[in-house]
Length: 319
Image (spheres, helix red, strand yellow):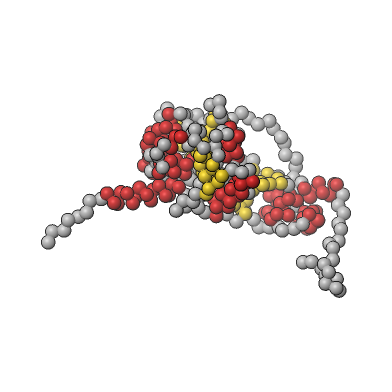
């Protein structure tokens, strides 16, 4: 709260001097410890942790964080400023106070050279994946065939996941999004060292590009709008990131209009607004498409159910 003088003029905040060592100590604070001391829940994901900002995921590693929906991140000072609503001096003082000395400094993160990307080993056939995509997800067989014939969809050998592959312009795979297909499976994720600029996408010759959150949403939309679909470009961010979008704009200067087709939930709408604003500043025509239900696959399944019910023969009552 601002302090006021006798004449009602806001008084300037007291200047607080921090040494370079103090700033660095605050910056290196272990964020997992900070959050646990606040009673927050963290979920381990490989070498990182996940924390929820409401319904939105924040990735944490040591003193570093990254907000998946806003595509922003920083160090411990930035974290306290954003999520604890403090200015810079308040954030540094808070971290140096260390919750009564209970916080520790995060050890330096070892920077290992990244491993080369590798696709998950393929199963000898993709019968399970075809059954899942056609029967459970309601996708059009011709659409699935088009991607499967280009080796963009296959079934993994070990866990029989559906694998959606993204290639660069030279046909080299750089990204694999995986989806569990078992009746009880909720697994979904990207293969290690996937490059998000090359997530699952299709490149056409027209000026249109459609962006989705997930491969199945993308395939569902195409299944509902099959006419001349191969002429257009489509991309699944496998998140709400815009990195594949801007890579495709860079690689395909013929694209002049972008259709943002994110989910209808709050994170999807927020991402569509954020990306739309960014595209507007670059002079790119943008439209936002919102599914009637939660996502495009739900729209497809509802549509197929309505068509099925409409085709059921009426019973003739004998009087």
